[in-house]
Length: 257
Image 1 (cartoon, rainbow, N blue to C red):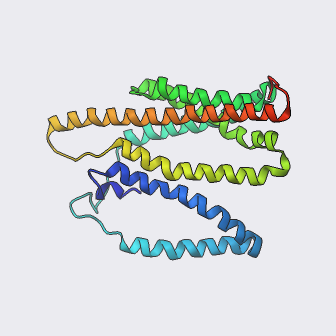
Image 2 (cartoon, rainbow, N blue to C red):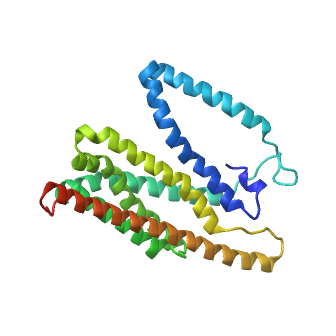
Image 3 (cartoon, rainbow, N blue to C red):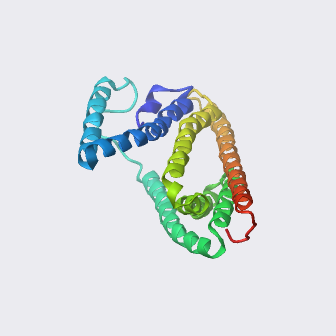
């Protein structure tokens, strides 16, 4: 992935989207394949087979990739430590807050209901995208990283227990597998669509073009933010609908669920 931007100019966003979608396709394919391997050969040979498979796929790919002349350097690479530190800081903040959120959201869910907490976390995630991420300066973006980590930790942590509450322990494996299949489809389609929304552009050394191009890219990136927010709001509506269906099937409405 790190060398992909070198080979694409105008369609760079779409190219990265397609490549990143490969992880979603891999998730869709590898889950049933791994289950078959585990059932038939056991965990030891399943891991060996996966290792051999990766080896035979990775070596040919590594052999055909070539350095593009005129881009980058084969010599010593100078790293902008300022960018590294900023990226590391944001990642550390997100990971730390997300970890604490998963615990606190679990405690909250035990008191007010798991479905209620999941619905709130999904809708609040979408709200934070629109309120804080859109056209965000650095301070507001850090606030978004913190709040989104809190809310995302909620629905990630509560998904397995919510599935159990609604469908029962006996149906957990099949329902959870289907949910991950749908999430895999989202990964397959989501990244390329975001790349299409981001659009295409061409590099230039002209200063005025760079300034205008940056403004255009910022506008397109804001469109990607809107796209992400709409998906989260739509997910919140779907989760709310499941909450209503669960109450209907059980024949009663409970505020704590």
